[in-house]
Length: 251
Image (cartoon, rainbow, N blue to C red; front, side, top):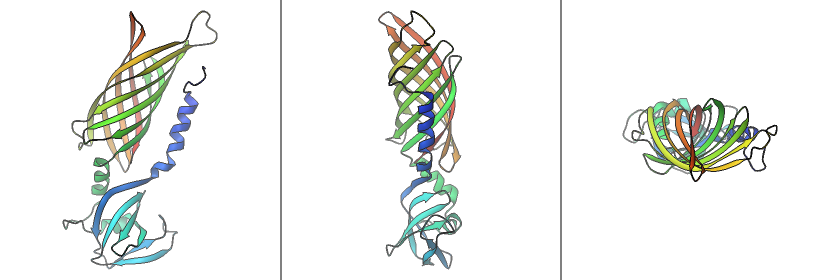
């Protein structure tokens, strides 16, 4: 494989290495809840094995700052910071006086998401494809997304990357469609056994449609259909179709 090209092993390494850091994520900024139980326990860390160092009493307000799986980092009005489990958070009241539900917290996180990281597998024409992406949502319905992928063919391999502008008209739907257009680069390199065939490096344009499904917690399932147009030469373009399914994390 040519130097500098993205290998399948490298893509997998990026996907696996990024997973642990995504378990610690920011909760909705400024989310305040009122304690309704006699007290809630603040632990020094996100787990029952960490000691309790402070208790917040009934009618005290706490602010949710971070979430780590089923544990929430909260700050009391007096400035104490500690971790509270989900069951105790669900027993609190919101600022409008309704009971806090874990689903509401997750939905609010989903609607406020900014960064998304994911990996997907599928087919580029009839050949297997692996890709990873990182997205930044800068408006309620718009996001920028950078994608890197590799296709393993019988006679050649292909590396590609592209940057897309995505539009999601109904961001509050749990199963939401989205659309995107982008530009990038495609590099096709033949197998070493082939004689007289050279590596091609082409400009790339693409259009994509897809479905995003909020599985719960910080997980999203995605199904993408993408039409690629590669500008091989001044008078030649090639078209490719890709279908992928993958899993993403947001924070």
